[in-house]
Length: 163
Image (cartoon, rainbow, N blue to C red; front, side, top):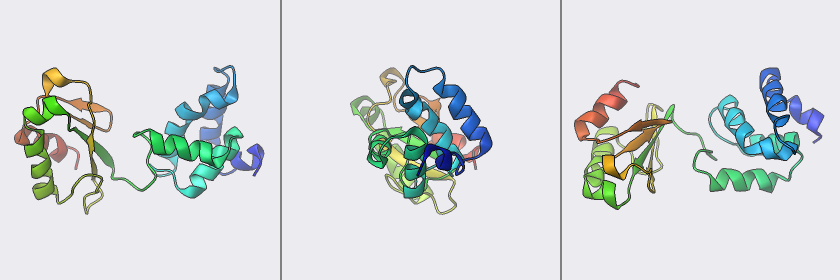
């Protein structure tokens, strides 16, 4: 697939955004990771094999290059995810301050474990290695929103407001 053919697989708005972004970098390929955020959003929140192929063609790189990025970075998904992605920190500070209790609550109340999506498609839960707010443990990220000093009640209030 050529770059021109790949452009036709994305919305004109996305292509314009990617082209504008690529102008800011010395090499077009340098805009790949930033552009992948927009591509993922347009393609339903994850990178299917088709989206990986189209993205690779758009940037003139091998499919495996894009697949490697998707596999390496947590913010890219290789399977469908819920409307909201919830990352619960599992490192020592959070563990000592109640993260295990929160994980158990998520399993009981929301019916999911690590890497699973709720039946209604609202949330995908992921245990995550250090989110960098040890002084405010336990913590989670809901999409890009930091939620600090969590309790079971606070967790339910935050997630309840997103349903």
